[in-house]
Length: 263
Ligand SMILES: C[S@@+](CC[C@H](N)C(=O)[O-])C[C@H]1O[C@@H](n2cnc3c(N)ncnc32)[C@H](O)[C@@H]1O
Image (cartoon, rainbow, N blue to C red):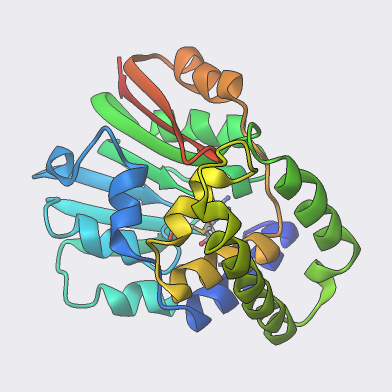
């Protein structure tokens, strides 16, 4: 564990606190994030979940995959414990921008992670290397488009103050912010005013549990590094790394879903 760069060590601590203090999100979000793929696309396959966090997606994948391997900067106990009864799941520690495996995988998923790596372009190239010809690479990433307030207000206040606060204080702030956001979400955002910022995103808030929404707020405050991906950038990831049947779709106005078959 100790050959990781010092900056990565710092990230490990941030994320570890998060996985140890939250139970994970509503499962249907995972199914939305992998569209147009479905769980059937993983049946009988050898799958890598790049940036597996608390291991929640591994436990979904394990129901159908032949083998599901999770890799994260921090092979947190919670990811291991959550999947302790699944004989086809393993979790290893590593940086997804550089990690190697003896054999490439049938499917590589990278859900909500590539934008937190130091160099997303380099990370995608490594994900492509870890995907075997004919296999799929599935990515879900925050978009540059539709995220003006996140890129300016949230990221700005993190730099100045929030990222320096102890985690329990950050958690208290995220609870208050979540409660405050519920007010417009259940009033003005119920009106057909689709021009409002985050309109589609807040439609999801009304379907998600409080704990998932609060986790999402905390996650945004806690993430030590966040890059917002333009459509051109995610398109280039697939174009420059040898893929066909590429499908890139927006999700809820704040993120991109990408999938492609390695040539
Ligand atoms: C927002 S979480 C997403 C976790 C999981 N994929 C999910 O959707 O629940 C981001 C995760 O990416 C991991 N991560 C960030 N940079 C990484 C890197 N360079 N290599 C491996 N994991 C990384 C963090 O440790 C953290 O667990």
